[in-house]
Image (cartoon, rainbow, N blue to C red; front, side):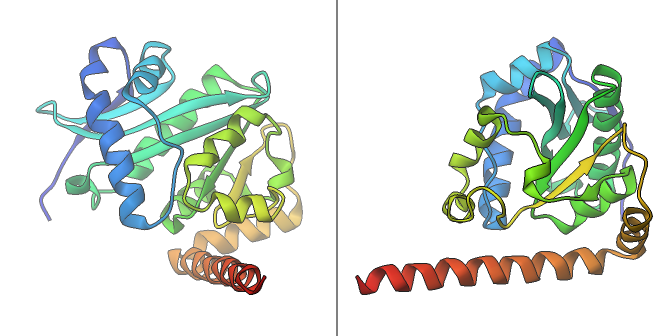
Length: 225
């Protein structure tokens, strides 16, 4: 495998020209996975760069390699590291982990008292989150800010979320709480998840199978009437 080194740094106005490429790759990646993420416009990504609430990865030659941004909800009580994306040609170098680590540090710097959370269907992202100190939680532990949940309307699985009264979906919720001392069972769970990626993969496959089966059953029932 060819060796690559990347420049990972907070995004600024000098990176605005990458916004279109970033949003296009976000959309293509969601389609390829068969899952949805909240769609963002190039203008929205540019705003995050101008506010200093994003991290970008470039090669030494200035080729875009990855990106992630920060969103604050509930008057800064909750923070999400959203839109993590790595260019296809750079997805075998551990870059997602490096970007996630940097945006996590930036989040802690800007919002030191905020709870940092994430919703993801990706086993690899779950593993990275776990290594950073996140633990799996229920949806009720996340922000109640309606603006955040409106972002799910562009996801192809939004009907599952609505049918579960916004308490569950294909995504797994994970949370980092800086004010909470880790409970014994949380430490044990995190250590188990750290052992290997296969545990996350089994979990995501099981959850997807259950949720999609519920959706199919509901659709069949409705078609009878």
